[in-house]
Amino acid sequence: MALSASSPRQKMINMMYLVLMAMLALNVSIDVLGAFWSFNGTMATTTKQMEAKNAIIYAEIVQKAQNNPVKYGNILKKATALKTATNNFYNTVQGYKISMLRTAGVMDEDQTTIPLEIKNVDELQSTSIAGEFFFPAGDPSRGKGASFTMMMDSLRSLMSSLADNQNMKDRINTDFSTADVKIGDVHTTWLKDKFSAYPLAASLAFLTQYQSRLRMDEADLMTDMLSSVTDKALLVPNTLQAMVIPSSTTVMAGSDFKAVVMLAAYDNTQAPEVFLSSGEKMPVEAGKGIINIPSGGVGQHKWSGYIRIKTDDGQDKDFPFEGMYDVTAPMAVVSPTKMNVLYRGLDNPVSVSVPGVSSNAVSLQGHGVRGVGSGQYVIDPSGVQGKTAKYTPTAKMPDGTVRSFPAQEFRIKSVPAPQGQIRGQSSLNINKGTLVQNRVEVVFPDFEFDVPLRVTGFTVKIPGKPSYQVSGDRFSAQAAGAIQNAPSGTEVVIRDIKYSFVNASKIPPKEPTPVVITLL
Image 1 (cartoon, one colour):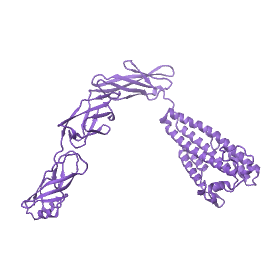
Image 2 (tube, helix red, strand yellow):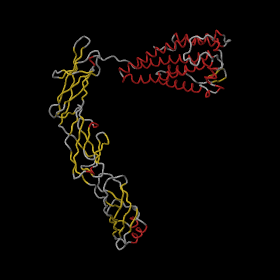
Image 3 (spheres, one colour):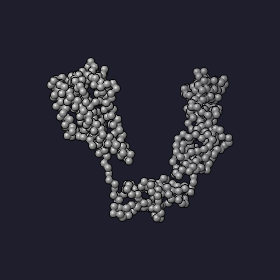
Image 4 (spheres, rainbow, N blue to C red):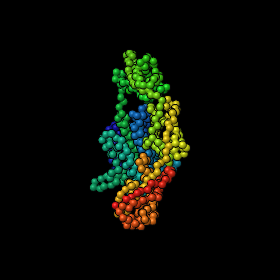
């Protein structure tokens, strides 16, 4: 399991780190460099051991999530995100160390594994390699310093968000802090504090320490994740409750009623037995009884039974259950959502349903049918010859069979002739001045469908005067002037109204009825 921050091993590493930093203040001898390298190796070994333990913890989370995805699925998701981030951080830091060792001449380009021993530790003396690697000429953006800082910030944010207590959050924020450091009265960046003026051996030890902290914090986080989900003991038999889950509470005559009966919790070391009240034993799958009862006659039916388990003392204990189901005659319902007829040239919306069957398992066959949703269709009967059409519903039943139902017959009608209107009326008395300010409109009166139309022209007829041809839906100046000069009581007729459909339409165009106006 994870090592806490106060574990003996961690205390030993921290003590070694303090001693070595104190030694660094003295002249860096070959022995000191060797001690740094030895310290680096010790931390690396500890880190590898922690990786092995972390792998065991992660495997445990994976196993639990496979056995119970509902309970542990979110924990696995978090642990996987943590594992991905920590591995990326660890491998990136390992790459940093290898790059600097190659620069120092300790490793060749073809070497990919850091050696445990170095023949000439004097090669670790350089105090400039780490600085040039992370912030050449003091600029982190020119080296790996900027990306290292960004990676550290991202890792710290993720790990802190996964911690469930403040102490753990504080520890993570401290272990992976990128805040500026104050030395005496001088402020410096964390990068320069760690990697300036130190021999390469010390810089490598710093990086290895980050890797060590990483694996320790990772272990504690995953351990906390597991402990946050308490494994609840299986409920004792006298608190169990039988559960009935029917496939459907409505059954058609000739079909079977089906349901699943199970315990809310059961002992997975023994399978329960399920019986109907008649004594007939039902098959059991994964602790669930599979119920299959012939539907019987039309009407409501009551059914019951019991689940039997053995208690710890070997006694049988029964848990009764009961339920109801309805048997209906075979039928399907096809309901036009607008009216009781279908209109040519229109997408007539229709809903189709079969009692006891999911809407997405129901379909409709017939001329001009197009599905637009679960159980929802539109029908355009424009191609139908005659005044009626039949449409047949089908359904995939809960038992997997496909069933057709009696065809439903609909009347087929044409869309009524449109009507010319002014101010919503086809015949009106109106003041001359008011009339010429209004638009001429065309609508389908008392029609259930919304079919917007646009007037493109019309003819104005005033007794004793020539007809005035108008373009658009407003009176022209000439027509308006003629109306203004006509005496009160004059009957003006708006006819030959031309129009277009605002939306694309297959409705055959018909001439609108005229508008008759008496001038006041």
